[in-house]
View 1 (cartoon, chains in turn purple, brown):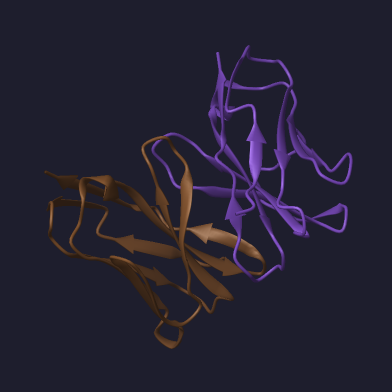
View 2 (cartoon, rainbow over the protein chains, first blue to last red):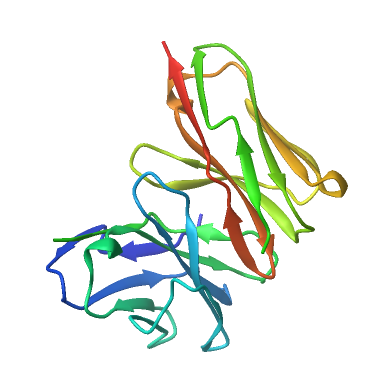
Length: 113
Length: 107
């Protein structure tokens, strides 16, 4: 069964450094997402991406964050100048349609020290 | 925005017992999904269920969209069912998650 793949599975970074989290969505999907889960909390929506542009973003997704689809297969989340509170599990997700099933990757655990 | 509330927040079961988890949502939704988050943090898709009832082995789910709730039934629970169960409502193309129900199944 096709799946969303994410790399790295775990990254430790120094506060202030830039981090890029990578995702390969399911190949025929058109809608891409990033979600975040701080340890012990619920999963929160960050951003949705369709037709090579952001379609919606949450208030969490400020100027520190950016997303890109640099080629036909990858979808990346860049976090500039990381802060301690950015430590979380980041999930990439994709969907064939906006209202259909959304499939999640296994997550990238980011630890900022 | 839409509010998604799950109950109970925590649940402890003896292996073999049955349970019902509830998800209430405050507004109309495009669809609803149930997930199981395993101890490694992975979100496992359980059901895509905008309305009606679906069954998958020992698990089944029912969504009554007109009354804005969904139920997840776990029968004959096993220790491997332990973890956090999330419901998430799709509104406007994005999922809004509830706070989850943490299930612990004891042998």
